[in-house]
Amino acid sequence: MSPKDQPVSFDEIMTLLTGAPFFAGAPREALEDLVGDSTIVAMKKGEVFIREGEYEETCYMTLSGRYRISVTDTKTGKKREVQIAGSGALLGEMSVLTGNPRFAEVSCVEKGVALRIDRAELLGFLDAAPQVRQRVDGDFRKRTLFSTFRRQEIFSQVDDWSVEKLARTMTFMEFEKGATVFAEGDDPDSFYLIRDGFVKLSRRMEAGEGNYFDSRFDKGLAPVAVDNEKSYTLSYLGPGAYFGERALFSVRRRTLTARAVTHLEVLRIGRDEFNELMERHPLLEERMRHEAATRYDIPPPKGKRDKKDKDRQEMLSWVEDHDILSGDHILILDLDRCVRCLNCIDVCAKLHHGVTRLTHNGIRFKTILIPTSCRHCREPTCMIGCPTGAIQRDREGEVFHTDACIGCGNCASRCPFGNISMVRLDRAVGKKTVRERFHTWLSALFTTGTTGDDKQGAKRRAVKCDMCKGYERQGCQHNCPTGAIMTVEPKAFFTGRGKE
Image 1: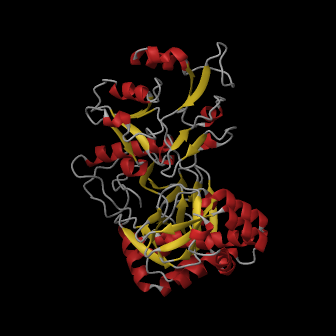
Image 2: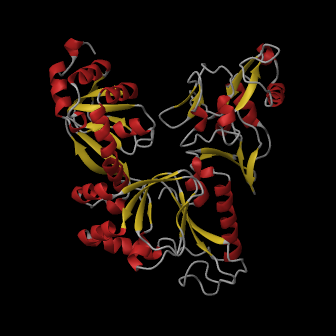
Image 3: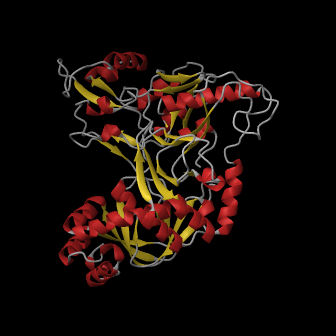
């Protein structure tokens, strides 16, 4: 957009930026550089320019118009409006700064204009304005609590004053995989909101215990002989969910253990602050008490309850052991439907220059196989240390390689699941049949070395499933004659609960 076509002048933009809370106190020179490096964009009525769940490295300073901020209700799956923003609002900056997916959707209510700021420019500005960076670090707690609260429909009526007060007292905590947040028998001193990652809630089973969880279970369920260390998994909770409220309501020691099954980030609200929130919002307290009484008390299915429930517990244990919840979405193969035609491997090779990214190797639970395909992790460790920046993530969260790959193998060594392979790209590969190219690929999987070329001078490249990025359809799924291959969101598929 040329200067003469710009709907707002440079001075008007500077006035808005200097008056915006985010930029307050910034040196004028830093603001001028930021404006000069950013782009003015016209927003159409109804246009959605920030989409919930996407990974994107841009934020927007609104210069005119009104904008609707909506989140997806974790129970109904429907969009719910949480705020209307006007001119002078900065939108999407926390996702840009943290690298996390967007927490909300933003659409244009009426025609407007915004300043689009890329991540590099925003970080450069913060380096030039340390006082702003310090304030942003402090505001992070408030914004994180606000967005986490608003993702749960149950907290939709909590007033902003209460949220702001909680933001001043809450604690941001991180737990590594396997760490215990609280244990059965602990004194209940906190309530927790999950910002990122997954937590497992479980209960220790006593020997001969007939009721898997509590007195509400069917008394006719046959006792199961187990040792005292065996636990019963009740639920996996993910981003936006909360836990720890039941013991606070009942004023008793914890009856569950909460343990991180991935890297976990939570917001901790103390008992006194939680009780004050309940006193200020009695309808919220009534609803939470009702949900706390029944939230995890789900009896085994009717029929062969003990066997089906045992199978479910085995599956959940397998999911945890193989870190499956760390993936945003994964490819699975239903072996009951698969007829071993290898169409999926053939079409994968055809779409990717003769080199298939898919094999029928991988981890397996009974009839479910997770092939050697990328899990597109929430925190892709493969991206760390790439010398050319060849491995990237797109706005949908898909991790992919670019032509900048030099075959160093750093990403393959960092992938905790072994789903990135280093292969030789021989010039003659196009003359081979698909089956021959598949066997060539298999023999190349164990090529060693750290440079891009092997001893024969053939180029080595990293290959992995990128969900057929750039194609209209995902080849393996579209060409499977029985529908045996599916892309699933792990928590929804393996726990049957979807996003909590």
